[in-house]
Length: 349
Image 1 (tube, rainbow, N blue to C red):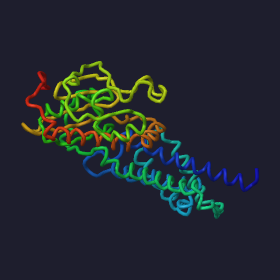
Image 2 (image 1 turned 120 degrees about the vertical axis):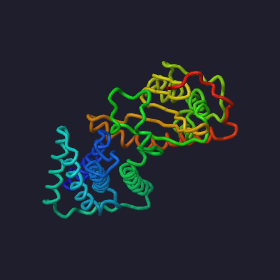
Image 3 (image 1 turned 135 degrees about the vertical axis):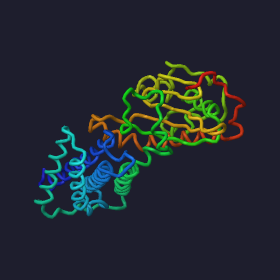
Image 4 (image 1 turned 135 degrees about the horizontal axis):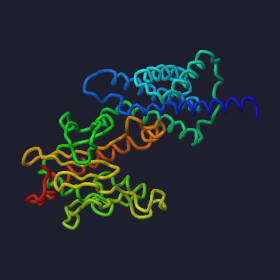
């Protein structure tokens, strides 16, 4: 291997390591230590620091890997990201985060000792692969920035301070709001109407009222219902709500991915293991609120798991769940979505 090839390989490997180091900062969100309290303080400073580290280090990593757009920014981004990471580790220190300190020390040493880098090899910009790889790098940085910077907003979308104070079925005995996410929406329809739509969810029933074209694009074969079906109004603890058809992707995720109903309170709450609590809260005779509360992490959430969840789950989950809440609202408020009287014989106290 030529010296030039070894230098190129070392640059790419370093870029991958920097990118992974940046993504690891998502652990602060999943451990509930950043930006959830109502007043500004150390947790909000940590939120700013870890978000800056995540975005800047991702930008620097992709620049070192070979993005021609991001390569000129790599040193500035690496400097800002390393400084922000050091602040984040100081504010949110936990004993198992010591590898981050070691990595930051190595990055700081590189920044002090570095020599002028060689330019990236010339590339034919007309090539399809060149254009698409540049677009993918920029989109990835934008995606990471949106997920990090907008996290406090999309984590609490549609909810109020009163919603977070509610005790709901499915809450653990010792609830930790910092390790939760909750979404909500106000609906101009009685609670029993909202419930009639909610209880129909499932790939084998009324779908999930979200973006079915996207769901079908991934082979989920989901078709959203636009009417209340009497045969779909019964649910019980122990039922399974499927997310996909049987044998989805050759059984890669099991025979039929989905969620088990662990608790049900007609017209009030549906608790799904692995998703969370769907709660319908009456807000007057003709209005209600639909809330979804999920646990997103824990004080000891693993670093690698947090990085994967942030990259692959957080933003898509928000987009689809927000679409679901809006889909239920649209159907419950439509004239054909109404039913005459409450069919529920049991209600929460």
